[in-house]
Length: 491
Image (cartoon, rainbow, N blue to C red; front, side, top):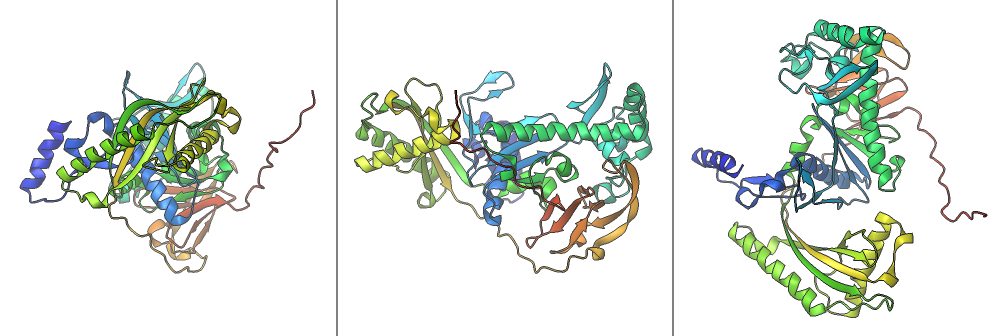
């Protein structure tokens, strides 16, 4: 990788480029290509989408966000919780090898616009195998023969074959219909349009299930989040995979959102130092951390970081240092990486602050009921995150216009809506001509140059003051009743 990318770097310099050449890291930052091991680039794209989501969530006032990236082959999910992205995968498996790196946590399922639909033993499955971009879906007319999710979207009337990719890539609807009829509808004994509807429903439920599992396994509820839907097929399917999330947000740059996220990622260096230390004594619950050894470990890591930053021509004084500690309670296997509020421990109050933050984050991750102070606390690993901030764009604010979207109206065309089980002469609108304040009430289709947004019946798609699209039900569901945590149970 370094040889190939280094050759690109040489060509850029020959062309007169004098700026930095950075690689995205799965740690949530970027760094010089010659300071980047290949394992640090694994899953970098979804992590860039996560970091972009975290940045814009802060600008828009959202604390809890589900980042959902629907591409051609995969659906990647990551969470921003309480404005934090500090959820990690320890020793990830790359291909079949366990790798000793720590990376931001994302999950991926085989679901996307190119996912192939097939019938096995009378049962429809969609994905994980994908047609890719070449030959791609049947409607691309590039030699593909297996029906895909994109073919279903074309057949249902959501994607306009004449305006796909800004009109530069006309699609063949007739071939998509033929493939779905012969390979899906006839084996299942159903009509072609039912088969297309079923393909879309299966893929949407697969993605909604991935979101639900990820959110519930972390102890949260989907109703507490908003969904950022991006990737080329994200806006096209956000109504289906939104599930119990009340609101889905679409960005103008949705098809290239991960690239946008990479452009705002800070330069980040991660340093890890394994060192087993007793932080809290078992039984007595007395904090006994060796302050001198703790501080020396952190100081040596900072010295190494300053040396590396200086060698890369970065301003050492701009660097921001953050310390995280891998800690666990005695008698338990659940290790938690917690943020340390101190870089140095110089007093009892400093040590107590470090422990309090660990207990708080451990309780949030695993339940306060499993906090085990009598077992003692052990420190396993030091992680120093060194950040050199980069330029960030501001989010524009537009003056709200009226709700009437007629200025962006294109035409009406037939689209099939499963909610009404019929073809509807559906109004279509041009995304680029919609103004802040406009509201499109479903059923409708909003066409952008590089994506499409179906608005189902009983839903609305509105443009908010930042120019973002918001998809939500016309009538919001009542909030779910929570079961009190202090309910007494009789034996």
